[in-house]
Length: 276
Image 1 (tube, rainbow, N blue to C red):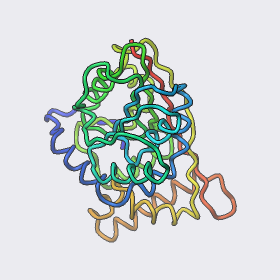
Image 2: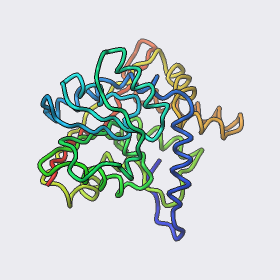
Image 3: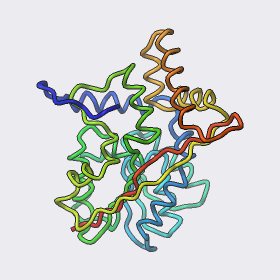
Image 4: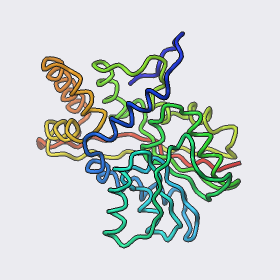
């Protein structure tokens, strides 16, 4: 998914949000999301969380950052607009004996008062919202002055950014819709948060995708990862085969393993915004 070109037609954000909701509710994202747990732990350390802080995790998915913050004795509220995601996060918290509050909520319209939280977080979540400026403004609104906003965002040039570009050749994104991967660029972060930020600190990091093989990765993602589930479902057999071939070529190019397995670094930006 490359940055969108300007369009003379208005973008129907409501329709896009409905399609996205359907995509994320398909498959079984928590099965994949749980492999990313280390990112939630690292983000909490980058934020230098303190016990007792009020933490809001938006677009929380299966709760990687929420659970990491709860392990640090924070007062955590996890939100997502897909109830099935929250149910899996709740089950994980119960299994670990962690106390969190779970609430169905849309990051573009958060049901909280201004300055309600010390820290607001999102890991590979808020970046996929249709109305990016509104989502960023809502995160800033509910974060107290002097508080922090912590993000983990895939970059356009990293593996996930490249994968979305491949998918976009077969299932083009909505016309005029800005790429989610822009959240992984400094200029876009400045555009989204600059007016409300005392500082924005972004560090490039890698999450390493480790799978049995390229074929194993593709099989898992086309079965469980909503955007790829929907992409394959929309294509005929020939285009599905071509998409698989293109994904295999991408993985082969980036794979640093020489033993038949898949070890592919996925670049993301670890972001800490200090609220003005």
